[in-house]
Length: 259
Length: 255
Ligand SMILES: Nc1ncnc2c1ncn2[C@@H]1O[C@H](COP(=O)(O)OP(=O)(O)O)[C@@H](O)[C@H]1O
Ligand SMILES: [Mg+2]
Image (cartoon, rainbow over all chains, first blue to last red; front, side):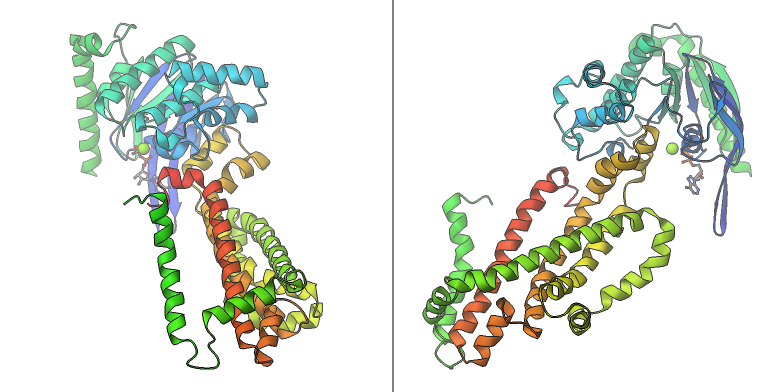
């Protein structure tokens, strides 16, 4: 479904050259939810932007359904980290969710259905007429999620979507993502720096090294599918996986500090 | 802090009342400063007559025409310049130069090109008003949020929709700031263009009164100009509050 092969990215600006991604190869099968975890500054956002076609790669390639990505693919949606800046403040919640559908020329009746359905699924039916700045951070991110879901993408990319919300909201949003994914089976690539979150959400967790970034490990998460904040997180296996990823990340850090 | 209705009105009127009182106190000391009552009388006699139709309305009409034209031109040119780095690099020094030229010095030039009638006056107003609108539009478009731009790209919002849903609303706070600056420049140029060569209009009439030593009438003209500016700026504020409701609501205006 989604194949990233030997992706390489160097930022070149006058007098500066940052090798953000050394070489990353990874694939996400149809309907899979894969978490990418790595230390801050290791190039997660860069990776995601290359996959989304928002940033040209310096080498390697990304394919969606076998088609090389050269610009944003038509059936891909992104939830950005900066929820406060990814919603249009001059539009209401409903208009924000509806805009991409209008551009996709979805008929009005179907559009209303999709908007209402997606807002309902994120629990924001009542906020449809509000403006984003009238909502809390967690609610704003839910609007962004609703917008992505209503778009009916084949691939959903998320860049540390919950990094800036409080712990309780974060747990709720994680469960929301799991529920939406279970209902829709949208192929999802979820980027985070939070190990717990990656293990809790992912069917697989891909651990990145610090830059120049490579894949350190591609780990299958063999936790039961029906996940739950309390029971899943208290499973011994959860602790083991978490510890394993944690040690990898520590190694990744040390690795980075050595150079 | 929140004052009730009557109190608010009282507070708003206190300062003007004080000024009129002070004026009263010093008036009469010289021939050139008639009393408020004399100016008020002159005001009623001068402006609530056919002069309203012959001088005030044409002046205001030219102002609005020039202002609207400058607004369209400024936004119309500012958007593409703001969107294109290359255009910006080429044009920005030139634009800054034109902005730096004081618009009144263009009046003689524009008179040569466009004569002394309405087109000249409108052109003078356009030539001064267009720069703040243009430069602010460029700045507003240039500073559009990158995350929103990415959002547009991901969700296929492009072309006219991108302009209408993203670029123009996103740059609106700056565009409105430019339009606000342009409004005061427009009023100044309306008067100046009429002082140069004209047989009607507010600016012309005020100069005429001054030459004929109709001092109270002259003052009443100045008063009228002040009132015109006040009304226009209040109207502008209304429109701005409406256009930028989201901006004031979100608190971005205070940030
Ligand atoms: N536009 C850019 N220009 C130059 N360097 C950049 C740019 N964006 C990111 N970088 C650098 O690339 C590296 C990876 O950044 P990023 O992808 O944002 O990491 P992460 O999302 O994992 O925190 C960092 O060292 C960062 O400074
Ligand atoms: Mg990042």
